Length: 412
Image (cartoon, one colour):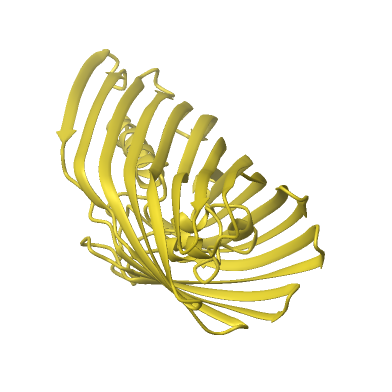
């Protein structure tokens, strides 16, 4: 009987470890549109490939900056970015909840306009996740008295670099951006489990990771007639450095036999394996039925380059309306589909499959030389999570996020 209880307790511990491994918070590599960048672009669902006529165009389509009306300085900050993921009834009848809260300015750009060409330097944070988590479960199973988990993780990706665009006549432009890609990741995690027989298990893990690379982006824009503009951009990130170092230790005390026994294990993992980023091809069209109204749509195609990833097509659409020359509102819708292959009856843990949908809204007030934008972005999705290591059993999951946006720009 004691042996059976000990096996149940051990299985419970393994479950928690595998559950955490399946749901640990990295920058979300399973989705490509986790944070929208810029003021006009973000509040129109990130639909900007066929517009891009300000410094934000360095990120979406550098060809668009050739049509900037003048020199400008702009920056945006996510006043608040919160995300919550819930895995239903994962621990007995208890839900597994994971939350992230971030305050990170995610864009800054300076644009210099000449007669037929433009230059720009921009700084972008397309991914930023910062998580603090403390979970306590009392008597989650008949053999477990208490389970405590503590987690702190930070995962931020930065892009920075120059852009240039050249205008050919009135209707065609070509642009190029060269970003330096830098990613910094760290996580410290530990849990404590105490069984009803007095034994305990203590686990500690510390991981650090860094990536360095380059992301070239080339773009074109064409206006076949005055009311319509189309654009296309192509980019891919190439890493020249990737380092990962992980340290973990686990300590056990077993009292199930009546005599305490103690075991301890420490491990270290070092890796220089480099991720293979997808080839990203973006298409966009913008239609201006009146001087005060704009409709725009984008299609983003991601061609997977890494084993275990699927090709993805994301869609977005947005509109902009000027009440008068100094007040404008925007609205956008977008998808953020997973890049993991479709699941079937043979799918085993660890695995998550969730598609996400988003909406954005913004208001901009203009003066003669500056603008101020306030906006909000909300995303939501539901899917399935395979949490038990090696098992085909699933749990329902939901993910919601809210971003409050503040942005300012000024003509130089």
